[in-house]
Image (cartoon, rainbow, N blue to C red):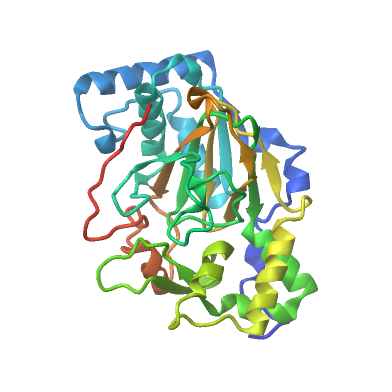
Length: 353
C-alpha cells in the first residue's frame, strides 16, 4: 500500500469524519427533542400495537403508524448512513411507562430506521444492557453484561440503538468516536502504520459459535470495498482471541497500529462524551463510528439500577460490505444482514421489568 496515495483518503473528509471537541459545541447537529405532539403520536401508536396482540418481535412500521415523526426518522436514517453517523432523540417520558410500553415505542421507532437483528445466540431482537454481575474477566462474557469500562468498538450490525430507562448512580457515560477521523489522524501522523490496519486480525466470538465455525473470526480493522471505507473493531475481543492456538498472532506492526488507534480514540479532543438520561434514544452507525461506555457504580436498589434497551438494525439502501464480513454478519444482503445466528437461535424480543 502506497503510504502517500491512499485511494480511500477522500472518505476521511466527509461529514462522518468529525472531532468530538467540535460536536460538543454543536448539539443541535445531532439532537432531536421530542415535542408533546410527537410523544402523543408515539403513545397512540404503541397502544394500538399492544391491543393487536402481536409479539413485539414482529413489529413493523405497518403496525406502528406514525405521521408527524416519519420525516424526522427518515432524516435520522439518512444522517446515520450519509451524515455524521449518529443521532440522539430525547424527551420520551419513560418514567410514565411500563417496561413493555417503553419497549414497544422503542422498537416501533427502530422499525422506521431498519430491520431488527438478533443480538446473541438465543435470538434476542431486544437487548438489555445492564450489570448482571457477570465476571468481565471471563472469556465467554460480553462486557455490556458488567459494570466495567468497555473499549471503543463496533457491533455486528449496521446500526445500534439504545434507549435509556435508568441511569447509573455514578459513571456509565456514553462515548462516541469517528473511525474515519481516527484513521485520518494515523494517515497524517503515522502513515507507516496504515497498512497494518488493513491486514486481517482475529476476533473472539465469546462462545457464540455456530456449528462448523471456529471460535474466532478473522477480519481487517479497516476495509476498502466498492468505494466505501468501513471499520470493524473490538480490541478486547482481538486480545482475547490470541488465546486460540490456531488464531493468527498479532504482528509487532499490528500491535503498534492498534495501540495508536486506541490512543487516538481515547483522546477527549477526538471522542464525544454524553450522558444518556432516561428517555434518551441514541442511534449509531457502526461502519463509520465506534462507541464505548465508562465504568459505573450502580444503585443498591434493584429498581433503580442502570438499564438500557438495545436494538441492532439493518439499514435499507445501505453500503455494500466486503465478503470477509460474512464471518461476522452472516447474510450480507442489504436490509437484512448482521446479527448473531446459530443453529439454536429463536428470534424473540424479551421484556424484563
